[in-house]
Length: 292
Image (tube, rainbow, N blue to C red):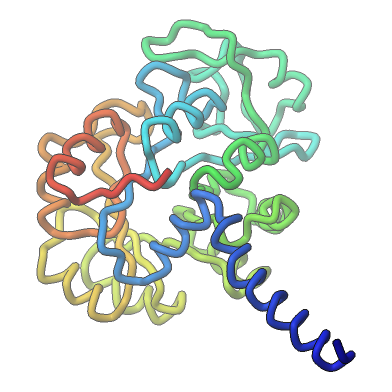
């Protein structure tokens, strides 16, 4: 066989290998990202608020595991930085409600927080510890998408968060949310392709936010969501997320019949405290396709 022919055969084999390997090596998170990035997903994605904390502590590795096992697509988690610079998963500015300890996250060292135990549903102290952001990303890598809610009010924390996501190799598997839009602008300054979810407090905010953040996605409030509004966003290939949570600070129940209204509106992502209720509902209506 001539050298040129051998090279040609090798080229064909390499091309075939490259064509086969990526699909074969795809993780669940890869498939979810591809579906979401279609910009007009044909199914509703379920986002578990602080994981599945109906039986495990919120924002715990066990709650994240349980959510993935249930078939959740996106895990939402909250990030703050300790006094000594460690990024931990914690919703409240103080640890009092969710752990066996006391004090502000920003005033405590990681060693102090690591010695605490998380409280489960009902407030009972459990064996779970407060996870770090690197540990949470490592737990979820390849298994689900992740929404990082930047809770720390100090904007200088944002580059550390983006760098941690980058170090985990999950830049294109993470979505970013923050109440402070300036934090999302800093995310974009660090990673221009980062997927951000700016919150529109009212319908009139949507167009300015899409212009400001590139028009890929928007976080909507249930009170003004209609089918016509969501259909218009779909025509613009804009992903819509709606939060059907009744009380974010206490992580209690979802809004009564929130599932039904948002499903009827056709939103792209529904965030819930109760994936064990939402997932069966969507599956019965064939609005959610489980990706394993």
